[in-house]
Length: 230
Image 1 (cartoon, rainbow, N blue to C red):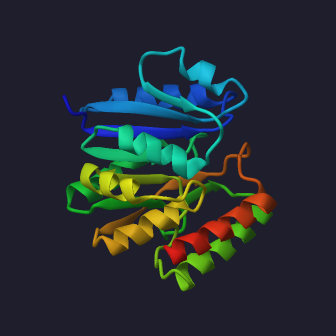
Image 2 (cartoon, rainbow, N blue to C red):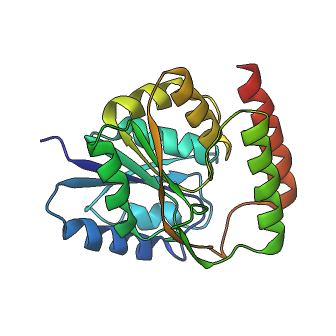
């Protein structure tokens, strides 16, 4: 039977916390009145994450090497998913799973894509990012708004929902493997004429982030250039 919801969590060196994410997902979605599937994607971890994922049978796993990037991991998970609606959520519980109900309501009312935002008036930032991360986020936010024309309050929040049709179309067309896949996804949504809605979320920074500020920023810039040239 087709599940109502697919939940995709990309993982890279998350051995210290992924079991908490899994239990939180199973607990929350197991209490809802709709069916769901949980898909964990190990993006070439070197810390034992894959061994942890392979121990349980309550969810599906995708494990591969070498590390390819968050965009690649999300793409693999989304294209494996079978749900009528599909969520990808960052590891680390930055956004509580309960916030999904706002996004599902938007999809059920006709949106193709619903994206969580940390920057809407109703959003609640419980714990801020480090200062250097906020500066980097502001710079890239300015680039995607002014250079790429994406007029959303927050393109990079790792809590986005899609209808099955939108997910299959967008992730089949995706080419960006790194962090800028969010921007590529929203640009392709605009290109394909899909309806995108934002919703406010409660959010807390994950101090155990995989993002590397210097090399990561350079890669992000290269990926934004690639998106513009596509």
